[in-house]
Every structure is written in C-alpha cells, then in structure tokens.
Image 1 (spheres, one colour):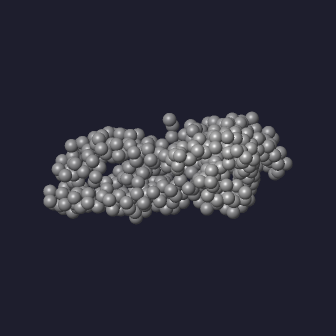
Image 2 (image 1 turned 45 degrees about the vertical axis):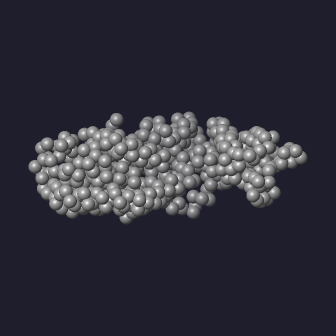
Image 3 (image 1 turned 60 degrees about the horizontal axis):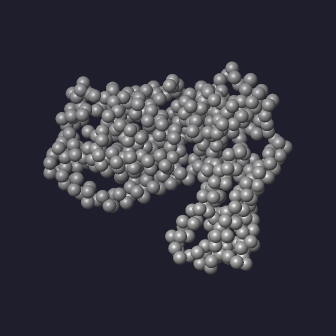
Length: 497
C-alpha cells in the first residue's frame, strides 16, 4: 500500500515538547475527530431532513394501520390480555408504542432513512420488523411465563406490519423520487485532481440532477481552508476522487461526518472505507456512498460517558488492589510508588501519564546506555530482559497492573479506556509525518495495538497501521471487542514484558 500525507511544519516533527496543532492537518484544536460538530440549522431544513421525516411518518403510519387491522380482526375472540395493556394513547395500546418505537430505532440504526432508496431496504425492513416481533415473544415469556398471548393477534399484526411497511415505503419512495425530480439540483462539492475537475463537473451536471457548487484539489483535501469552503458552499454531499487512503479515512471522512455531510467516493478512493459505503451509479459513474447517521454523535458520547463511569467504578472497586500494590512497591525498592512521564496526547497536547513504578529510580538515566540493545526499531524502545525492572515491577508489567493509575488520566479527560497508546516524547520525536494521525483521537489505556501483539510488535510502522485501522473503523462494538481481548491477554500475560 502506498501512503501520501499532508506536510507538517518542522517543529511538529523535531520538537515534540512544543507541539502545536497544525490547522492544515488537524481540523479542530483539542477535539477528537469522532466528536460531532454542531450542525448548521440550515442543514436541518434541507431535502435530506425532509426525506427522513416523510419516511419516518410513513413507517409509523404503516405500523399503526397494521395494529388497527390486527385488533379489528381479533377483538371478538382473542383480544390483548389486560396484563399487556399498561396504557392507551391515540386509541392504540402500550404494546404498539413499544413495538413501533423499537422498530423505528432499528430502522434508523440500520440506515433505512438514508438519502437514497435501494431495493435491499425493503428486505431489510421486513427482516427488522420480524425481528422485533419474535424478540417480543421471548420478552413476554420472561415477563410472565403463564401469560398466553393470542397467536392470531401476533401473526396478523406481524404479517400486516411487514406488508404495509413495504407497501408504504414503496409508495413514499416513489413520491419522494417524483418530488426530487422537480426540485432544484442536488448541490455537490468536488475534490479531485486539477486535470479532472472540468470533465467530472460537466459529466455530473449533464448526466445527473447535480449542481457543482465548489471544488478543491485533492492535495488540499485535509486543509482547514478547504473544509471551510465546503461548509460555506453548504453542499448536499461531497464527491471525492483519488484521495490518499490514510488522509481519506482518518481525515476527510471524519471531518465531513462531524459536519453531517455525506461523502461519495469514486472507486479509486474506496480501499480504506470500503465496508462503510454503499455502491451506487451516479451519472454513469460507479461510486461508493458513505452516509451520515442522524444519530451519529450518540456513539461517541456513549463512549465518553462509559469512560468516566467505568473508570470511577474501577477506582472504587480496585482501591484495595491499589493499596496492596503501593505497599509492595514501597517495601521492595527505593523510590516513589507512582511513575509520571510526559506523553503525547490529543492534538499534540503533552500531559503526565500515571503508572505504578516498575523500574529503579535511575531508569531514565540508564536508558541512554541501553539504547544499543534496543530490540525494537528506532522509534520504540523495547528490551525483553530490561535490567532496570524491579522484581515487583516485572509482575506488574506481566499482569498490566502497572497501568491501573491511568484510570485517573481517564477521569481527568486526558485519556480514554480504548484508543492509541500515548507514547513518550522520546518516541514521538522520531515520528514520520503520517504517524501523527494517531494524535487525532483521544489516547487510551488499551488499544488495537495492545491486543494484536503487544510487546511482540517490533516495527512501529506496523503498530501505527493498527492505530490507523482503529481510527478508520471505530465503533462501540470495536471498543468492546478490544476491552474483552485485553482482559484475556492480561490474564494470560501474552506478549508482555
């Protein structure tokens, strides 16, 4: 894979202790790229929002009609048991509102309110409606095993919901397509090579319902001026071509996502984000549509709340462990219990990371003498049988208990539970330009690097690519997988020294 990267100023590459966020490479000082910007009110008044509202109302209406039909067919011989009717609103029982709410949330989560209609959406809608109904059977059983829910009502409501939702969506999408054809052209901002701008612009405006409202060279895709031009143009989407993979996934995608602007890629720019997009033909060109979710900021906010809640609980529950480790360190070696070191954090901000001390007090001074024995590449320093490690320290490192004080860094907002590991300034001083992409997200106590080889990874480029993969494909599920894998590795001590 070939990487191309935006240039950082010399101080960023040579003097890590005075790093300044680079506006040409980073888009918001002090902000994680996964945090969503406050969208302009004008964006909520556009076609995309109108489409979402119409589809939501159509789905809600279809579900309501399905339930009314099912109740009419069953009211004489198998009504809803009174135990399942907690309230009635607008003539519909409580069960309907639970069903409808769950169904619409699933529709939203699985992208059924995207900017375009696809044949697969009808099958997905039927699957999700069916899933809600079958899950309800399990929940009713656990609610009251002796409760005999009317089967005729269940099947009539299920089948009528699937049929009416599909039919309503078919009608609504046809109506929206007709309205879209009569409305003003969709606004698109182009990012491509200079020799492709004129031809691509002509192709879009001649063959499709698009109006090009701005353009930028691919070499400036991740600069602040280009991003501000995109915001000023207020496009319905951005069409990008030939953006280098790493800049695309770790820069442009997250910038546009934070501003609620969909990104459409031409095939040459899709490698890093392939699994995120949906193939579509536009103006005779094969493209990959990467949509923004109307709940896109929720996952990151949940992540940050979980960071604080889990860290606080861990500190309270593990306080006896903290005390025991502190006593063992104090009575087995000379020096303080805790070790504090400058590390590089979000947006190049230096902070003090906390750890239980595992080495002798003069360890930093001895490192210069041990550099020639370094078993990793020049960026990282790893020594499997490091003579500076104390007897207790070796146990703490193997079990990763020395990292526990970083829970306080999480509570201070300097770190997250999961993210790229913050590295010492000695390591950062030797970074290549593209390595700094890892500083666009909050560093973590554990990360993909740690669960994919830990200390056994000897080349920093391999570790950096794991960090980039984490950034590009981040989700709450990925964080959960990393945390579970971390617990497994901690228990086995795999790759730790």
